[in-house]
Image 1: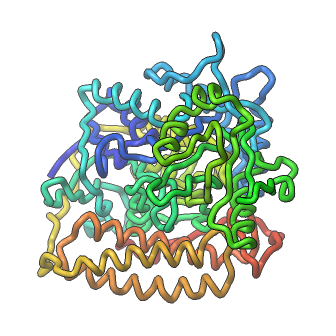
Image 2: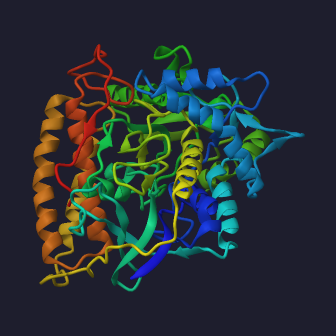
Amino acid sequence: MERFDFLVIGGGIAGLSYALEVADRGEVAVLFKKDVLTSSTARAQGGIAAVSEETDSYREHIEDTLIAGAGLCKRDIVELVVTEGPGCIYRLIERGTEFDRDGAAYHLHQEGGHSHRRIYHAADATGMAILQALLERAEAHPNIHFIPHCFAIDLLTTHKCGVGENKPNRVLGAYVLDQSGKIVPYLAGKVLVATGGAGKVYLYTSNPDVATGDGIAMCYRAGVPVANMEFYQFHPTCLFHPKAKNFLITEAMRGEGATLHRTNGERFMPNYHDKAELAPRDIVARAIDYEMKKHGEEYVMLDMTHKSPEFVQEHFPSIYKRCLEYGYDVSREPIPVVPAAHYCCGGVVSDEFGRTKIEDLYVAGEVACTGLHGANRLASNSLVEGLVFAKRAAEDSLKNFMKEVPEVQPAEWDSGSAVNSDEQVVITQNWDEIRRLMWNYVGIVRSDRRLERAVRRNKVIEDEIEEYYWNFIVTTDLLELRNLNLVAKLVIRSAMARKESRGLHYTIDHPELAQEVVDTIMSPSTPK
């Protein structure tokens, strides 16, 4: 067994920020599923939103967020994040993050749905700049221990260990598949789950391969409710190229005037919204999807040629370089783009301190459903949410923190009669099938009939995975598949429960808004 004071599952902006906040009080283990640079944070291009200009205000950032959230945001949470965000960004700067400047002031981008320029950025690789600064600071702290290439399988709780069933359930740690293939209990007094999103549940996504919904699935199996999983945000512009896997074209390009066109050159966004290309993401993605289906085209074109080549190369160097590798000069010609699954607005139900239903278990970042995003996330609000709730979870963790040995000793992992699998094709087949059925039946535009088909097929796959899970020794691929299918189930069931079109959830059978505005809560019947 491994013992720490704090266990952090996930090493993106939320996980590392939390680790740095608590490390002076005890030993911290930070688990990375792959290497330390593989996370959604590393891929965040556009930036991080916060009020700084005298011409901007908290009130306007709050209103922009509420409008994008389509009536489902929790106003107190929105106010909390918007007002605490600037302080968290200054903390990032203190920890070594260098955002772009325009003279003495910071250069700020504007993105869809924002009424002002308020997006701090480091060229078009903001997430990587933040991540590298946090990693460098965390690596230098003697109490922070990086543990890469390990997979948190399931949470350990008092109820799961069969004790204290008449008392509130409390987290004890997690079972972890380490790099050697051993499954080891990691015990800790406080646990933060910061595993990011689940974009790999869809066929086309901007997310890294590690985004398989592990934290959402783990928490749900442990007995924590999830909310609003039907609201999956599709980023309007990912590069369309057979070799350009998951390559996002930042919304900041549209903020700098890039326009969207059909393949024949016809511009279409002014037909859909008065803000045209700067409309909220759900509207832009749905417009692109409609134009592609209406005209039988595989992609649309993003045109940045109104800006000088020097401007494009200076402000979007990573995009410029990557597009050149695929044969496109973004400064001189339009580039082909398509929508792709980008961000999960739902997640594990948590409060204003990142606390969950299970004592001492916290969530932060994309894995959480805090109420900030409502039915649609405002661009660049995700990184600041991760920062704010990492800080708040750390503050709450330290309030009643005592170094102590857990009173429960969990059993070692029991593989029973499981053997090594000689049928890996079961995993690859089901993995592919889940992602295709989600794309085709539970995508940007939905219908009751498609969702019913998705439910039936999801159940068949679930039964196959469950049988496979208990008969064969677990691997990372099997664990990801198990989590992915559970997340798919939660998205499908949530989408079926919402009989209206709101924000990111659009269904042709219920195109109007419902009179009552409610969250979609999925509660597990019993912890597993």
